[in-house]
Length: 430
Image 1 (cartoon, rainbow, N blue to C red):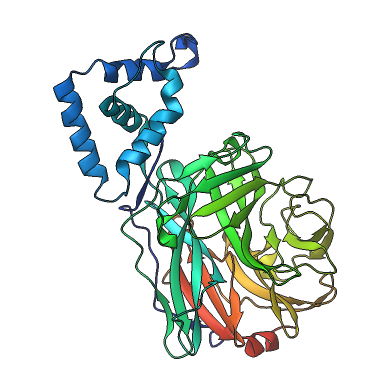
Image 2 (tube, rainbow, N blue to C red):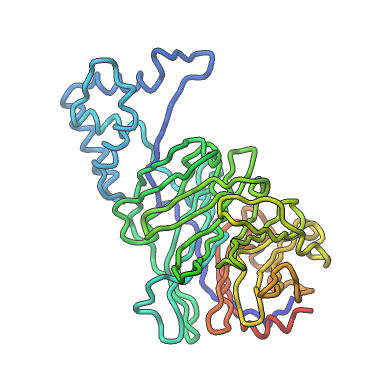
């Protein structure tokens, strides 16, 4: 490792348990006790309906006052949840407005989505650069938060970088939006699920938590990229790992503004794995990904359709001791004058995760031109302890004026930032 290559920021992003989102809460009896004619949801609703008017009013005032401290439009949110479960009402019964609010509250939960950890960031250039530093830029950061039950969600931050001042992260909003979910297939096996964070006024107010069966144990490691179509139109795309508790697979992310997101199941043989990262533009008219479908080597995959991925060819395999176990990418390839810069990770002894880099040919990314024989970033002795010790990891970097801006996670616990001169990085390759 070259200690003089990277310039480290003293900035750390740590988990904040006070940041919560309201999500659906569903109850059911264990299998031996289930009664399809009278499910547990209906039992809970009947108990709410049995409350007298005074108690209903007091309960409503209490819950609305409590939630309004950190959530907007609480009544709208609770009524929306009631509408999702109103089929469980007893036949012929219509709930009064206060009863609707309480039913929505009983069948919702406040979830602290970054209670345990906040790490594995990716960074993209913001569409609107108004107010950016003269010698820098404004960016959006995605991060993986871990909450109760080791369930992963994706949260966002904004910030800026300048050559003179380094990295700065804006304070997150005190508000978090409970999203409206639209999707043709709850399983997530087909189609697109839309997450609409109505009322979000800042990226930090939006959160992506598991909403389909394929994601029920987590949405992990969003590799976000600013993708530019052939007509010059930019958009925020990315891949993330959907984990159902047993199987992991890659799915597609699309951001349309600060408050609407789409999550689409990918088809083909390659997405039944982890760690796919999309190139920021088409190459010869085709979409391209870096993948790791054999859990050991980096692969290059091309496709005419962004939702279908098959085949591919091995691109880079473990060569040096720090990557003998496996290799992977640390986000989407970055286009520079010399080619495609790919930040990599390698796993070595004691499952140490270190980071390196390689350079691919710009016209033919299946051709590797050079790679770093030594890591560019290793776990620091002072910061190696955490939820998963001995890990540094990133889900995406960018280059600005020949400076690599690299956010990274530490010990699956918190995030920090570093930068380096691209020319100096290339000199470390062979």
